[in-house]
Image (cartoon, rainbow, N blue to C red; front, side, top):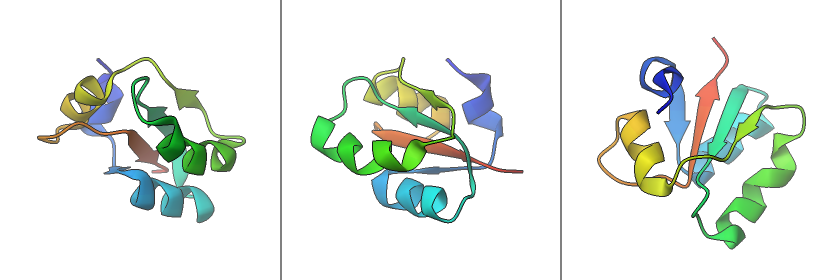
Length: 79
């Protein structure tokens, strides 16, 4: 799992990640490989120019981000 996720300033979820992307605050986006494509379809167009990683499941992504539930999207914020 990515140590980067446990230590960096981040937001989890579609709404917060979309806001961070629209405001130019996103440094990297993690998309769960098993998330609903309809959910990810709202985020993916906003990721132009931002590194995207798609290797973890929702459960793995939530655990790596230190939250008690799965996450479809976690965004690391610029420092």
